[in-house]
Each structure stands twice: as C-alpha cells, then as structure tokens.
Image 1 (tube, helix red, strand yellow):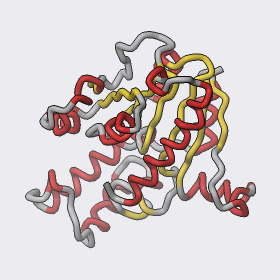
Image 2 (cartoon, one colour):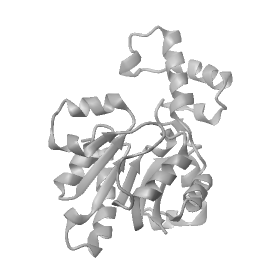
Image 3 (spheres, rainbow, N blue to C red):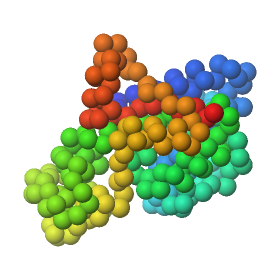
Length: 242
C-alpha cells in the first residue's frame, strides 16, 4: 500500500472510530464502500474488526479481486449505472466514497439510494478531486476537464498526449490516434465534475446535513483557503442523514 492510499485509509478509519464510540461492538456497525474497486479499503477495515461491504460498477475491477478468492468477495456486489443496490433500507451506519463521486453521472439516483440504505443519523464521508483542479487526476493532463465535452477538449488531450510518458496499460499497444480517442472517451463518459457548492446543495436537497471538513493545518481553515481548496485541490466533506 502506497503512502497516499494509507493516509486516506487511516483518515477513513479515524472517522469510523470516532463515530463508533456510540456503539459497544464494532461488528454491529455496518459500513459500505461505494465504488470499492478491488476491495482494498474493505479488506483494510475488516482487518481492523469492522464489518465493511462494497459496491462497484466496474466489472473488470471486481474480477481482479474475485480471482484472489478471499473472504471479502462475499461482501462485494456489482451494481448498474442506475445505482440501485439490493441492501435493505436503513441498513448502513456509514457510507464511504473515495475518488468516486466525480465518476457518477446520475448523482440524483446515487443520492436517493444512499439516503435509502443509510440509517437516520448515519454518515456519508466523501473525498474527491475539485472541479477546477489544474491537473485532471485521472488523465494526468492539465486543464482538459475545464473544457466542454467537445472537440476543444479532444484537441487539448491530443496536445498533452504528445508529451505523455506513461500511457494506461489498456491502451499501450494502441496507435497514437486511438490513444487520444480512448482518453477522450474516458473523459466524456467517465468523469462528471461538480463544483463543491453544487455538490453540497445536492446532498442537502436529498436529506443530508453537510459539513465541509477542516484540515489539520488550522490557519488554512479560513474562508479564503477553504474556497481555494474546494475549487482547485480537493473536496472532503461529511454528510449526515437527517
């Protein structure tokens, strides 16, 4: 596990431990990792004696986890783009998302579903890149996500691809033109950024209280630096179901 991932996982664990103080038994706390990928966070939390489940929309990511044939497989479920799960209503105490919400096209159906399966007073803790972060975190290309989803964006992806040193494994053997098309298609069909205020308002409209989480460096928690962070770095917030 790399340092950045470990830092994020420890952050989630800290939030969970703080929430679990109201529970006598960690195993009675139900946690869901929405967009769990290969299930690494699930394994991490289960190893810390919490009962964590996961849902994932990407079948290929799930397959790489299933090949391991570990006990966590039974706790990970494939969902469709409609964001519907088979969990009972009011089942979970905590729902986590890490670099996931920017990939969800239909955010209304996502919010409707997490509101349904989350208990009253339960929390959703979310971390995602800011809409106007200079370097698009997935493509590693500056400014491309600032442009509308049309040929202007494609031309910019073409330009940055000329200097890209490390291409994604799934398109290593593609011709240059096909690489550009692949990155462009990913950009328009797999990324759906919202401004932090738009995102907070959406959560509030679907029955959540939203708290913009402070960071450890106190002098950076004023209104100005918080604005810069949410616009150009990352968004990190806690949403509590009313």
